[in-house]
Length: 476
Image (cartoon, rainbow, N blue to C red):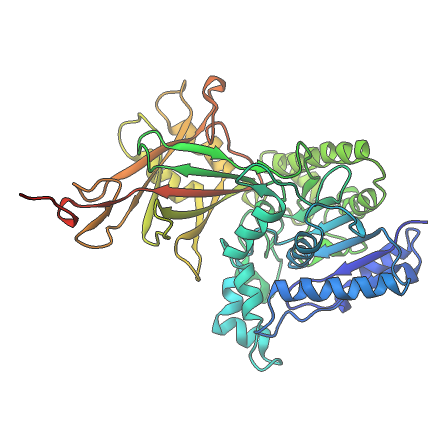
């Protein structure tokens, strides 16, 4: 008999939305008594993700002690439920030991935020979502959900990435097994379309769902032209987590495997097959095999955007626009000075090094860089959404030197006043430079060579704060 399953919903939702998922499980070997549906407060302004995680531990422990939940059990989570469960794990089972859960199937988890969060905090969000909740829309929950939030940054450094290189995490072959499934089809109708964007399921981007994140520190304080790049250590050793992208599912239908998606039958039924394969995973070797198989499915989704015949075969009636299926990456930047203070007013410019003219930079910022979000709580934290397909197929062909397919970035920051500048005390507008992508295998180090599709890159940037000469003098 399969393990018991608990289902955790997302922001502004409830367990009522998951009856069809429960029906799917019972149709595939589960008994109704094996399936638990959870509910938590997500729309009251005083409740944070941390509060829900704390309460979750108490409830689960009580259920285990009462012999209602049998250890180990499995979790299926949707959207913000991914953050809730990660909070719970990282707080109470940080090294994965004695954890009562073995498998976590994440359906469109907002692991690295959602563009919808900013709208949810606005007045229109309060009116649309909070009309029957005293205009509350879950402010504290949405602060954590906002793109480039401090909460996501700190959570990732607790459970996924270790800047200091000596910590472990809750996930791995002998610990908890996470699986991530996300769609890349925007909402087809209704008010939900207001948040549609390419490379998203209407609410969560695949790049924001993927747990296989990358982190690093780029320190310009020693040499602005040759910064020190320090990769953060992956807490799960060499383990990689199964992740895949489906072209026919939006944020609402990703948890409804019994609902036809409008794609041809085999593709429409794939969601259910993936959920069952994750729940049936029984060994580290099988987990690694699922990672490989799911990676192949994600690549098949991306290839549809370049193959009209395959797209029409997959979607006989209503094929999506090709750009909806492009692969993206997120860069979450946190910029501070070498005294540890956040830098709020800075500019990042992407360009092709050693290229004359500015056509490449203009193309990148208009076509490749699709969206930049400045976090509402701290302008030092920003999320850049980059179309990797346009980078590889549009930006690089513009480059005049075919032997050097490179991407560089410069960072400059506004002076704090007449006495303090960044990078250079003798001139305004000084900047640091770094090559962030280089296809030359012989030069791969630090950031270079990394343009990882469907992934979030967390980058801490340290820039030198320079007082001008008159700030301190010695005279005789």
